[in-house]
Image 1 (cartoon, rainbow, N blue to C red):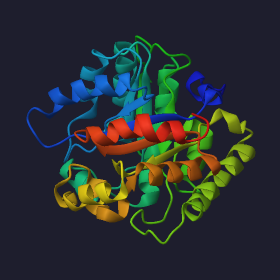
Image 2 (cartoon, helix red, strand yellow):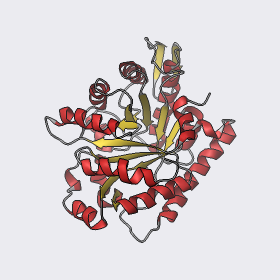
Image 3 (cartoon, rainbow, N blue to C red):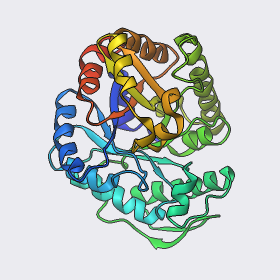
Length: 333
């Protein structure tokens, strides 16, 4: 597996992506398109819409609309749940979005975690191992389809006969594949075997101000070390995998007092982000520009080369401050 061009661009410095939480409102997708144009103009590398159909807009529809009004920014979901769509269908969607966008798709994949969403879709949530096996089957099928193969496959969860995706995606050898999750034994081994990028986050609560950023970075470094070990075991060059970090929710303001006031007005229980609903304040980085710059710098020092930051798509202050005040202060940008 050669180093994907998107991965190789890490040699030029730190890059930033945003994952947007879209409100529960009839006009939200139309407004999202305008926000996407501003995000592209600010220089972000990637715009993600997450895959949680129980609470949130359908990402493939939203991203297709955004593809028609943007020209440079990469588009995708940081993770698509492997069980929600058959891998053949998923590869079809990925190839079509890549062609619609002129070669700007990033295919994110994960095993899924929201039991009630599985139930709403009529799917068996199963064990973690079973969900990880679903992801393994998906990766085995999707990678080959996007590289132009005709695929016959019999897996534990998914099977396909004579599957092919034409026309092929614009990118060669295929759109980059990102696998989300921080599991050191299984998920990061799947990254090393199949993917072009990991997407990890620290274990500590973002609401605990007694934990220094250097301590948070230790857990991230441990995960990256585990990834390195899997790459070495599989004989894969370490630099073929982009080290990306995920912030579940970022809320920015010029000062800490102003950021705290924004947090006080936020009701996480009605968020369309299920991760935000589940984690509440513990999963939100509420920060001044200075605080955020220090936090992200600690992650770069731990080995992170790329950031995907989730935020409210209507929080234009955070979108602007992250691009104009925080990112330029993080070494490597």
